[in-house]
Amino acid sequence: MPSANAPLDRVPGLITADTLYTLHELKVRLGLGTHAMRSARRSGLKVRYIGRRALVLGRDVIEFVEKHGKARHDPSWRLV
Image (cartoon, rainbow, N blue to C red):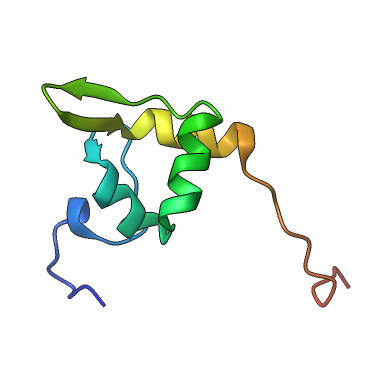
């Protein structure tokens, strides 16, 4: 668990639109496995390369999740 003083760019699960992430860092931040990352790339997640380093722009991750992510319905939650 990050401390209260942890910089926001180091918080697991937090994706910032104007930040570049390595594929490994995305896996860790999003809690995805290797198969899920491969699937995301095949489904259109934009990956950019500098030399051999694969990088993903945060706004591309957010756009991908908005387009391909599925909202889960929790039947135990309801408006009263």
